[in-house]
Image 1 (tube, rainbow, N blue to C red):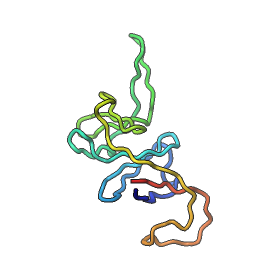
Image 2 (cartoon, rainbow, N blue to C red):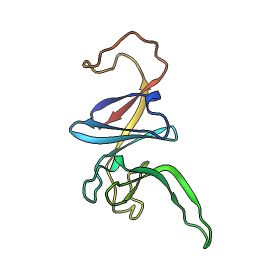
Image 3 (cartoon, rainbow, N blue to C red):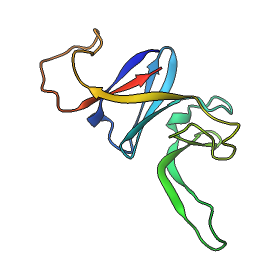
Image 4 (cartoon, one colour):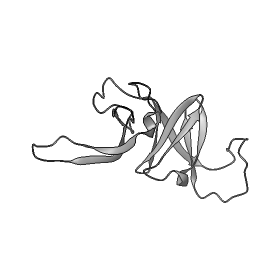
Length: 135
């Protein structure tokens, strides 16, 4: 399992995303309401760049005549054909038991001496954690 430093947690505030290359794969890292999630940046339908799609909410089951909008910021919509996926689980909205996109673990760790060698570093005071993608 690989470890890839994505950046400081403060650089990825709630509602934002970052697309990264890790071990030859394009992966989208999302901050959803302060929790971090990662999805393969490839829609299972026709390999569109899924993580570049709109991030929205969805309508929830309700009584006739009601309209309940929820889960704002938790659903990514494929930019090519509109297929929707739950960022928190990778499961599709239309068929969650059979259609999904690959997910990856993301953690926030204390910043320290673990930055890659190719990154120029300077002495700093640690005030935020690092967002780490695990592949």
